[in-house]
Image (cartoon, rainbow, N blue to C red; front, side, top):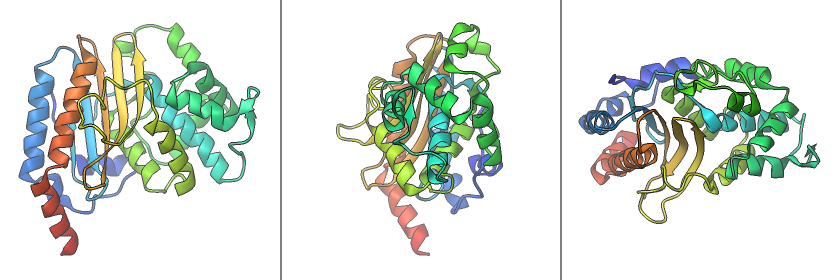
Length: 284
C-alpha cells in the first residue's frame, strides 16, 4: 500500500498550481488522516485509491493517489465538461438537440441516472473520445485517459487490469477542482453540472451513505465488473467544499468501503480545530 506525500506537488503536474497554504498539507492532523486511511484501506479486500482536496485552503491527502484505476462512468464528468466548454465558447447550446432531445436533458440522464446511451450520444456530439482526450491534454490533466465509447468499454473485459479509460485519484481530484474554480468552465456551466451531480441517483450507498443527514454531496459514480467508484464534492458544516475521488477494484463490499472512507475524510476535514487553524492562516 503506497501513501502519496506531499499531494500538493503532484497536483502541480495535473493542472493545479502549488496550493496556497503548504503548511496545511503536512500538518499533523492530515498526516493522521492519511495513516487512518491507510489502515482502513489495508484492512479491506481489494485495492483502493483515494484523493481529497480542501477547496478552501488546499489541504490534501492521498492513498495510492498516483495509481491508475478504471474510471467506468466517472468519465461522464469529462464528457459533460467538454460539451459545456463548447457551450461557453458559443459553439453549442444546452437547447441543441442531441439524438432528438435537448442536450440539457441528455446530460441530465447521463449524470443523474448514469445512462450509458445518453453518454455515448453526447460523446458523439462533441466528436468522440479523441476530442475529450484533446481537451483534457490541453488543460494539463495528466493521469486521465479516454479511449472508448461506453458501448465499446462495456463490450470488453479485463477492467481490473485495464490501461484504457483510466484515471488516477489525484488526476480526478484535479479535474474536479478545476471544474469548481471556473478556470475551465464558466460559473454558469459548472453550476449546471453540479446541480445535476447533487441529484445523482446511483450513489446512495457510496460517498453519501454514512455522512450526516442533510450533508450536500455532488457526485458521479462508476461501476464495472469488479470496479466501484465515486467522485465529487462534499460540503462541510461551515459551507466549504472538499473534492474527493475514491476508486475501488477487486475484493468484496466495495460500496461500504467507499462509504467508510468518505466518512473518515468528512470527519477530519470538518474538524473544528483544523477549521479554526485554517481561518487563522487566512488572516495572517
